[in-house]
Image 1: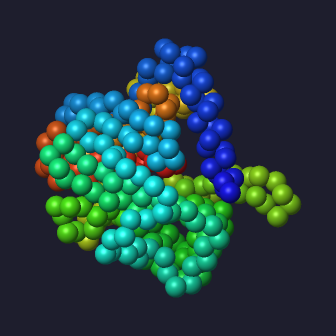
Image 2: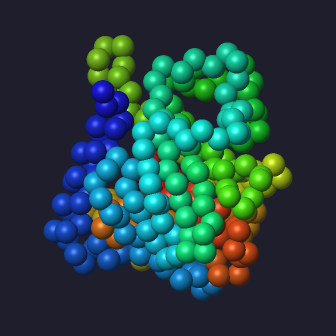
Image 3: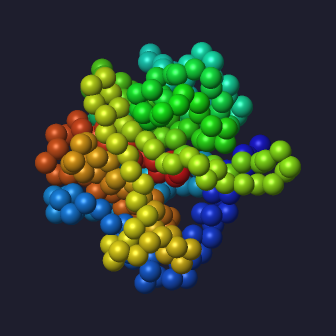
Length: 262
Protein backbone atom coordinates (compact mmCIF):
# COMPACT_ATOMS: atom_id res chain seq x y z
CA UNK A 1 0.00 0.00 0.00
CA UNK A 2 1.34 3.44 -0.94
CA UNK A 3 1.95 6.00 1.78
CA UNK A 4 0.29 9.39 1.70
CA UNK A 5 3.59 10.99 0.70
CA UNK A 6 4.10 8.55 -2.19
CA UNK A 7 0.60 9.27 -3.50
CA UNK A 8 1.23 13.02 -3.21
CA UNK A 9 4.51 12.89 -5.09
CA UNK A 10 3.01 10.64 -7.78
CA UNK A 11 0.33 13.27 -8.38
CA UNK A 12 2.93 16.04 -8.23
CA UNK A 13 5.15 14.26 -10.74
CA UNK A 14 2.21 13.77 -13.11
CA UNK A 15 1.25 17.44 -12.90
CA UNK A 16 4.84 18.58 -13.39
CA UNK A 17 5.27 16.35 -16.43
CA UNK A 18 2.17 17.87 -17.99
CA UNK A 19 3.34 21.38 -17.21
CA UNK A 20 6.81 20.64 -18.53
CA UNK A 21 5.51 19.53 -21.91
CA UNK A 22 2.82 22.20 -22.05
CA UNK A 23 5.25 25.02 -21.26
CA UNK A 24 8.43 24.22 -23.22
CA UNK A 25 9.98 27.66 -22.75
CA UNK A 26 9.81 27.60 -18.96
CA UNK A 27 10.92 23.95 -18.95
CA UNK A 28 14.28 25.00 -20.38
CA UNK A 29 15.10 26.88 -17.17
CA UNK A 30 17.67 25.45 -14.77
CA UNK A 31 18.28 25.77 -11.07
CA UNK A 32 20.65 28.46 -9.84
CA UNK A 33 23.96 26.85 -8.80
CA UNK A 34 27.21 28.24 -7.44
CA UNK A 35 29.09 30.26 -10.07
CA UNK A 36 32.37 28.43 -9.40
CA UNK A 37 30.68 25.08 -9.85
CA UNK A 38 29.04 26.29 -13.05
CA UNK A 39 32.37 27.55 -14.44
CA UNK A 40 34.30 24.40 -13.55
CA UNK A 41 31.88 21.69 -14.63
CA UNK A 42 29.79 20.55 -17.54
CA UNK A 43 26.06 19.92 -17.40
CA UNK A 44 25.07 16.29 -17.96
CA UNK A 45 21.51 15.68 -19.14
CA UNK A 46 19.82 12.91 -17.15
CA UNK A 47 17.97 10.25 -19.11
CA UNK A 48 15.67 7.61 -17.69
CA UNK A 49 15.10 4.19 -19.22
CA UNK A 50 12.03 2.17 -18.30
CA UNK A 51 9.07 2.83 -16.01
CA UNK A 52 10.10 0.64 -13.08
CA UNK A 53 9.87 1.88 -9.50
CA UNK A 54 13.63 2.46 -9.68
CA UNK A 55 14.40 4.00 -13.06
CA UNK A 56 17.63 3.23 -14.89
CA UNK A 57 18.95 6.76 -14.82
CA UNK A 58 21.97 7.67 -16.93
CA UNK A 59 24.06 10.84 -17.11
CA UNK A 60 27.52 11.34 -18.58
CA UNK A 61 29.64 8.22 -17.93
CA UNK A 62 27.39 7.05 -15.06
CA UNK A 63 24.25 4.92 -14.93
CA UNK A 64 22.02 2.73 -12.76
CA UNK A 65 22.29 -0.77 -14.21
CA UNK A 66 19.69 -2.48 -12.00
CA UNK A 67 17.25 -1.76 -9.21
CA UNK A 68 14.72 -3.55 -7.03
CA UNK A 69 12.53 -3.44 -3.94
CA UNK A 70 14.44 -4.68 -0.89
CA UNK A 71 18.15 -4.53 -0.10
CA UNK A 72 21.23 -6.08 -1.60
CA UNK A 73 23.21 -7.85 1.14
CA UNK A 74 26.40 -6.01 2.15
CA UNK A 75 28.67 -6.06 5.18
CA UNK A 76 28.02 -2.58 6.61
CA UNK A 77 24.98 -1.57 8.67
CA UNK A 78 23.36 1.81 9.28
CA UNK A 79 24.05 3.32 12.74
CA UNK A 80 21.74 6.28 12.51
CA UNK A 81 18.84 5.26 14.73
CA UNK A 82 19.13 4.64 18.46
CA UNK A 83 17.66 1.74 20.42
CA UNK A 84 14.64 3.78 21.50
CA UNK A 85 13.48 4.76 18.03
CA UNK A 86 9.96 3.85 16.96
CA UNK A 87 9.55 3.39 13.19
CA UNK A 88 5.90 3.27 12.13
CA UNK A 89 6.42 2.81 8.39
CA UNK A 90 9.45 2.03 6.28
CA UNK A 91 10.26 0.90 2.76
CA UNK A 92 13.48 -0.56 1.38
CA UNK A 93 14.95 -0.30 -2.11
CA UNK A 94 18.33 -0.85 -3.72
CA UNK A 95 20.16 -0.23 -6.96
CA UNK A 96 23.51 -0.98 -8.59
CA UNK A 97 25.36 1.98 -10.08
CA UNK A 98 28.34 1.92 -12.46
CA UNK A 99 30.62 4.00 -14.64
CA UNK A 100 32.25 3.25 -17.99
CA UNK A 101 35.55 1.99 -16.52
CA UNK A 102 33.96 -0.79 -14.44
CA UNK A 103 33.57 0.80 -11.01
CA UNK A 104 30.37 -0.28 -9.28
CA UNK A 105 28.36 0.80 -6.26
CA UNK A 106 25.61 -0.97 -4.33
CA UNK A 107 23.13 1.49 -2.82
CA UNK A 108 20.68 0.33 -0.12
CA UNK A 109 17.87 2.81 0.54
CA UNK A 110 15.55 3.10 3.52
CA UNK A 111 12.64 5.54 3.54
CA UNK A 112 11.12 6.00 6.98
CA UNK A 113 8.16 8.09 8.06
CA UNK A 114 6.43 9.00 11.31
CA UNK A 115 9.36 8.62 13.68
CA UNK A 116 9.39 9.25 17.41
CA UNK A 117 12.51 8.87 19.52
CA UNK A 118 13.28 9.64 23.14
CA UNK A 119 17.07 9.28 23.08
CA UNK A 120 19.93 11.42 21.77
CA UNK A 121 21.01 9.18 18.88
CA UNK A 122 23.93 9.78 16.54
CA UNK A 123 21.67 11.19 13.86
CA UNK A 124 20.26 14.03 15.97
CA UNK A 125 23.48 14.74 17.89
CA UNK A 126 26.01 14.78 15.07
CA UNK A 127 24.39 15.36 11.70
CA UNK A 128 21.61 17.80 12.53
CA UNK A 129 22.94 19.58 15.65
CA UNK A 130 19.45 19.83 17.08
CA UNK A 131 18.94 21.66 20.34
CA UNK A 132 16.67 18.84 21.51
CA UNK A 133 16.86 15.09 20.95
CA UNK A 134 13.35 14.38 19.79
CA UNK A 135 12.58 13.63 16.16
CA UNK A 136 9.17 15.20 15.78
CA UNK A 137 6.26 13.05 14.66
CA UNK A 138 5.52 13.52 10.98
CA UNK A 139 9.08 13.94 9.72
CA UNK A 140 10.53 11.66 7.09
CA UNK A 141 14.03 10.27 6.87
CA UNK A 142 15.66 9.06 3.67
CA UNK A 143 18.99 7.28 4.03
CA UNK A 144 21.20 5.39 1.60
CA UNK A 145 24.21 3.21 2.41
CA UNK A 146 26.80 2.98 -0.39
CA UNK A 147 29.28 0.12 -0.85
CA UNK A 148 31.91 0.74 -3.53
CA UNK A 149 33.87 -1.88 -5.45
CA UNK A 150 37.14 0.10 -5.25
CA UNK A 151 36.73 1.78 -1.87
CA UNK A 152 36.44 0.03 1.48
CA UNK A 153 35.23 3.19 3.23
CA UNK A 154 31.40 3.18 3.54
CA UNK A 155 29.50 6.34 2.64
CA UNK A 156 25.96 7.28 3.69
CA UNK A 157 23.49 9.81 2.43
CA UNK A 158 20.97 10.95 5.03
CA UNK A 159 18.18 13.47 4.61
CA UNK A 160 15.40 14.60 6.90
CA UNK A 161 12.42 16.38 5.37
CA UNK A 162 8.80 17.42 6.03
CA UNK A 163 6.03 15.11 4.85
CA UNK A 164 2.28 15.15 4.51
CA UNK A 165 0.80 13.25 7.44
CA UNK A 166 -2.68 12.31 8.55
CA UNK A 167 -3.75 14.11 11.70
CA UNK A 168 -5.87 12.51 14.43
CA UNK A 169 -9.02 14.09 12.98
CA UNK A 170 -8.27 12.58 9.57
CA UNK A 171 -7.06 15.77 7.87
CA UNK A 172 -3.99 15.56 5.64
CA UNK A 173 -1.52 18.20 6.78
CA UNK A 174 2.04 19.12 5.87
CA UNK A 175 4.71 19.23 8.55
CA UNK A 176 5.55 22.95 8.56
CA UNK A 177 8.08 22.75 11.41
CA UNK A 178 10.68 20.44 9.91
CA UNK A 179 13.31 22.00 7.67
CA UNK A 180 15.06 20.06 4.94
CA UNK A 181 18.53 18.93 6.08
CA UNK A 182 20.89 16.41 4.60
CA UNK A 183 24.46 15.21 4.34
CA UNK A 184 26.67 12.72 2.54
CA UNK A 185 29.10 11.31 5.10
CA UNK A 186 32.01 8.93 5.54
CA UNK A 187 34.32 8.31 8.50
CA UNK A 188 36.08 11.67 8.22
CA UNK A 189 34.01 13.62 5.71
CA UNK A 190 30.74 15.53 5.81
CA UNK A 191 29.31 16.96 2.59
CA UNK A 192 26.19 19.05 3.16
CA UNK A 193 23.17 18.70 0.87
CA UNK A 194 21.17 21.86 0.28
CA UNK A 195 17.83 22.14 -1.50
CA UNK A 196 17.70 24.57 -4.43
CA UNK A 197 14.38 26.17 -5.43
CA UNK A 198 15.69 29.25 -7.27
CA UNK A 199 16.03 29.42 -11.06
CA UNK A 200 18.98 30.87 -12.97
CA UNK A 201 17.02 34.05 -13.55
CA UNK A 202 16.43 34.47 -9.82
CA UNK A 203 12.76 33.50 -9.84
CA UNK A 204 11.47 31.13 -7.20
CA UNK A 205 9.92 27.74 -7.83
CA UNK A 206 6.24 27.78 -8.75
CA UNK A 207 3.61 25.42 -10.14
CA UNK A 208 4.25 26.79 -13.65
CA UNK A 209 8.01 26.51 -13.20
CA UNK A 210 8.58 23.45 -11.00
CA UNK A 211 12.36 23.82 -10.79
CA UNK A 212 13.83 21.80 -7.95
CA UNK A 213 17.31 20.53 -7.22
CA UNK A 214 20.05 19.93 -4.68
CA UNK A 215 23.61 21.21 -4.32
CA UNK A 216 26.39 19.38 -2.45
CA UNK A 217 28.83 21.51 -0.45
CA UNK A 218 32.04 20.71 1.41
CA UNK A 219 32.65 23.74 3.55
CA UNK A 220 32.49 26.79 1.26
CA UNK A 221 33.10 24.78 -1.93
CA UNK A 222 30.27 23.50 -4.10
CA UNK A 223 31.20 20.05 -5.42
CA UNK A 224 28.14 19.04 -7.43
CA UNK A 225 24.48 19.75 -8.07
CA UNK A 226 21.45 18.00 -9.51
CA UNK A 227 18.17 19.25 -10.96
CA UNK A 228 15.43 16.68 -10.39
CA UNK A 229 12.40 18.69 -11.53
CA UNK A 230 10.83 19.10 -14.00
CA UNK A 231 11.12 15.42 -14.80
CA UNK A 232 11.96 15.96 -18.48
CA UNK A 233 14.71 18.49 -17.79
CA UNK A 234 16.97 16.79 -15.24
CA UNK A 235 20.64 17.78 -15.10
CA UNK A 236 23.79 16.95 -13.11
CA UNK A 237 26.88 19.07 -12.51
CA UNK A 238 30.13 17.65 -11.02
CA UNK A 239 33.33 19.69 -10.68
CA UNK A 240 35.95 18.77 -13.27
CA UNK A 241 38.89 19.18 -10.83
CA UNK A 242 37.81 16.44 -8.40
CA UNK A 243 39.49 13.04 -8.35
CA UNK A 244 37.68 10.22 -10.12
CA UNK A 245 36.76 8.33 -6.93
CA UNK A 246 35.03 11.36 -5.39
CA UNK A 247 33.22 12.04 -8.66
CA UNK A 248 31.87 8.49 -8.56
CA UNK A 249 30.76 8.88 -4.94
CA UNK A 250 28.98 12.15 -5.75
CA UNK A 251 27.36 10.66 -8.85
CA UNK A 252 26.13 7.69 -6.79
CA UNK A 253 24.59 9.99 -4.19
CA UNK A 254 22.84 12.08 -6.81
CA UNK A 255 21.39 8.93 -8.35
CA UNK A 256 19.87 8.15 -4.95
CA UNK A 257 18.31 11.62 -4.92
CA UNK A 258 16.86 10.90 -8.37
CA UNK A 259 15.38 7.63 -7.14
CA UNK A 260 13.71 9.42 -4.25
CA UNK A 261 13.00 13.08 -5.01
CA UNK A 262 12.38 14.87 -1.72
